[in-house]
Every structure is written in C-alpha cells, then in structure tokens.
Length: 456
View 1 (cartoon, rainbow, N blue to C red):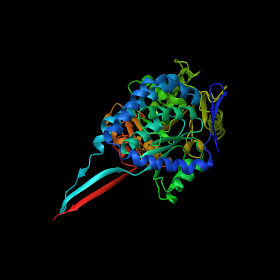
View 2 (cartoon, rainbow, N blue to C red):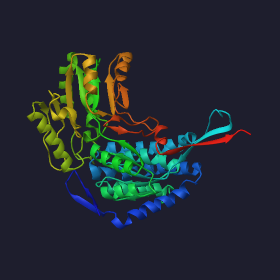
View 3 (tube, helix red, strand yellow):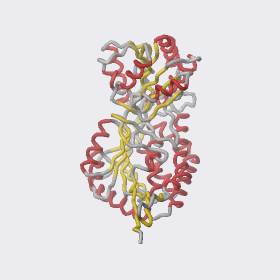
View 4 (cartoon, one colour):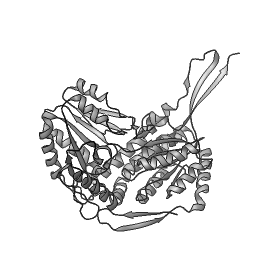
C-alpha cells in the first residue's frame, strides 16, 4: 500500500499524508467501476452533458480553493494556477456544449442494404494515470470526453497531488457524476498493473514519463487493452526572423518559464539563425534574470519552485552535466531553498552531450545557432521526441512551410504550446500516441459500432 504525501515545495514542509489504496481493494474498485458503467452508459447524453456543464460552473465557483491547492502541492504560481482552473472549466464546458453532436449516429451509403449506420458508443471502465505538473487540466482532457461518452473512470493521480485529486472527484460528484462513474484512488504502480489485468477494465490513458508510459503500455498490451500515451517533449522554437527582438525574447522566456519549465510542450530548444543569434541570446538572458522567482502564493511571482527537491536536483544535475561536457551556462542553474532553481540559459550544446537528446523538465533554455533553414529543420527533428514545435517569422507563408517539415503532433506559427478545448493534443515518436481534446478526444475509447440492415 502506497502513501500519498503533500510536501510544500516552497517550504519543504510535509503538510499531510493520505493512506494509499489497500491491496485487497483493487478488484473491488474495478468491479465498482464496471457496475457504475452499466448505469452511466444508459444515462441520457443530455444528462451527462448537463453534469459536465455543472462541473465547469463549479470549477469557476471554487476557483480560489482549487488554485490554492495546487500552489501548495506542486508550487504553481497563483495566477498560473487560476488560469489552469479556468482552462479545465472551459474543457468541461466545451464537451457539454459540443460533445453531443459528436455522438450523433452517422448514416453511411447503404451499399446494397436498407441501412448502414455507425454509432459511437462507450467501451467501459477506464484507468487514468495522471501527472503532477497540470493536476486539473490533464485530468479534464481525459475525463470530460470519456464521461460524456458514457465510459467510467478510475483516476490514479500523482502521489504529490492527493489533495487536488480529491477536489476533482468532489467537484464531479457534486455536479452529478455518480460516485461509481468517477473513482479517485491513491494507488501504486503495481496496483495500476493489477487494475489493467482485471477483465472489467477496457483501457488506460497515461500522461507522464517515457518509463511510466512504456510500463503501462506493455501491461495494457499484455491484457489486450487500449492505451493512449502523452509523454515527454523537447520542443523546438525556430526563429527565422523578427521585427521586434525584445518582444520575441520576452515571449520565448515567458513560454519557457511558465510552470517553472515543467511542461511537456514547453519550448526547450531555441534554434536561431546566425544573424539573430547573439541578440536573441542576450535578450533571453536578460529576460531570465528579470523573471520574478519566489513564493508561488504571491500574485507577483512568475517562477515558483519545482515540484519537489528531487525534481530540482535532477534538473541541476542535468545542467552541471551539460557544463562538464562543454556547454556554456550564461545565467542561473543554482539550487535554492525549498525546491527553487535559478532559471538557466545554456548554449554550445553538441550532439555528443546528454542535454542534446534528453528532456530537461525545468526552467532551462537551450539555444542553438544554425546557418540555414535546412539546418534548423534538421536540428529540430534530430531528437526522439515529437510533441510540438513552433516557427517564428514575419513571413507567414515561409513559416508555414517550415512548420510542415517538423516531425511533431502539433506545429505552431508565431505562438507556442497553445491548448484549447477544440484543438487536438498529442505527439509522435517517443512523445506517445493517441489524441486528446476536441473531436479527437472523443475518438479514442469508443466502440465505433456498425449496424447494418439488409434490404428486403
């Protein structure tokens, strides 16, 4: 049995411990979800949609409470925490308003029959394995479409997110989602594996590390269960030209330092053409030095602590290794009290260095100099990840051409990491497979059922 612990990364103080799920209750949880599915799947779609609409309303009504919880748990600055709560509300509301149309049966060409009809139906109980970096948003993009479909959910959150995961369940249940349709569990990795082996469970969605994704996908495949994975990223930010370097570096720094750099789709590699490189590096260094690092509960804080001391130490070690291998550290990189780390800018990274191919999950920017657009594209694609990437230019047509060459699931022009309820989210290569959000998020855990009636 695991224990979930809330340790405030700002102070290093352990605030609360939550008892984990007992091993002898795993099968009971799966059976509860299966029983809940039999009732939830027959609940009329308008009623399921209304529950999601009420969920959105409650997220907004309880925004201060929800935001404060994740500021304490994983150090998200107050304004960013409030923004995540609102984005989550927007996702639940989008599916409440648009999801019903996505469930409308589709009439096909009869092809010699009286009727050929395709229905979009739920498949059953699902397991969600969610990370700590966006405690509400990650859950919303998995839970909202699947609850609307009629699937039921067993949600295993990150062990540092016990309080916020309980709040999510509380909100959903208050909104009218039955207790057996959404079950929050403080489960261990071994218990997740046991759930995936249970006959009642029909699929799993994981957002997290490559290691965790590989383990869950393997267990799901072993038991013939569908899986969706959203894993890491080392997103490129390609700068072709700019008519306002100060604005460009301000945007770049803001995107990289949001959530203390702890985002899969954060721009981690800045790829800049020769003639812009020096100005960009100096501007980025200035922005990193100016960023307000401090107590995430303070509304003026821009960069809070990392999620834990161990996360801080991992990033600090990655920086130190890069420097030892020959990279140049221009600013930052020193650990502070609690789980704080000074925002860092690295240059001079070569393919032989660890930092070239790994994901640095913290407030660290890696800047590369290239001499041509072809070199920029080659460098952008020369990693195992393929989540998202962006191209920046005053020439939109040229930027779009370059964006089309990026081997990623999401390519942006003159913005980075935009996520909206109606847009697909997901990657390729080691960044995982499957899609969330929009109509694509409704298409993963479904029975696309054909009903064909022969002609007389």
